[in-house]
Image: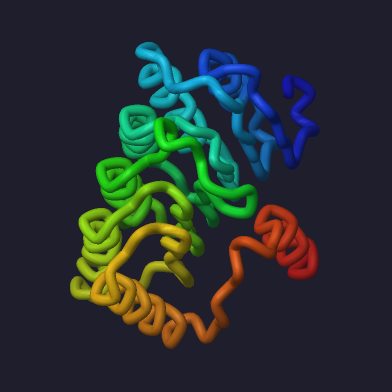
Length: 221
């Protein structure tokens, strides 16, 4: 990490406690473009996880990272709320284009899911005006119900109602237990976003979004 030559990094952390070291490494690596954290298996979130998750969020916000992929890594409700707090505290995130949780590798353990509180906190932090480059927001297979879905929808709708022009192209809450009313509201949000950007929806389960954005960036050069 300290060579400043790392562009894309995938890690499978042995335990949640290693998040602290990861956060410090991210802060020390300005070249990092994409970070993917895989699950740590059967271990459940511990009482000291929140501080580490908040540190990781702050480090990512202050970096030049474009893709943050916490694939079913099991932070739990308190951990994801703390991560969102760190992301909001960083505040200067002018680079992040994609935030993904729980996609591609199946459901997280029940104890590690973000739930409604985590989804709402992440939406409040990431769908704010300061995150001007964010294009994709995905919280899949994470125990989100209608309450969390409506919180995510409100975060997007409030920006559109103020006449802002976010770069956001798609919101995904697939794999969660949502009612038809909540699903319709998310679909309506995505229709508006799609009409503004002129882009088609991406299947988050089938695409390595880090690679997709990297190739898009390279082709634009």
